[in-house]
Image (cartoon, rainbow, N blue to C red; front, side, top):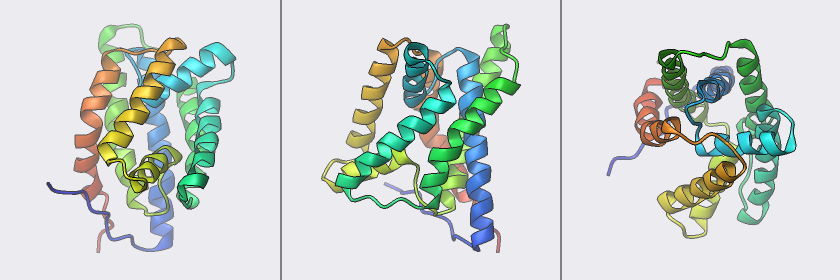
Length: 201
């Protein structure tokens, strides 16, 4: 089975550019997918459910949950990088900004356009920020930490995402065709974009 290899990292300014461009694009992808009202990713269904029941914006919950997940890194002996901290602080800010800026679409075709653009943006963004090699996001780090304890990546990721999806759905988050599209597309999209985010030269 082929694995995705990290790109040659390049200079620090180049890596920082890719990191923050990736986080901005990731936030845009989240915002577009939520605004489609066709269903979000498992984590964003969870964030949306928390927002519905406890108040605060979805972006604020992305930040708060990211910070809480990082606490779980301590017993897992995971070490954050600048990319991890930046993910916690900025991802929710970018997501909220996009949801505030873009109009909520009414026609179904426009909602599908938001959904598909959001999922593709998330795949491209993952290639950018992971390719920077400055630390995984808190949720990815939880997955790799569980992998170090003996769980396979597939089992760890599936267990985490099924759990947060179920809780988010019970809290009123939107689960729909967009959730299925994200689940099926995000892996292939990430694999497609990762090698194309390599720095040139």
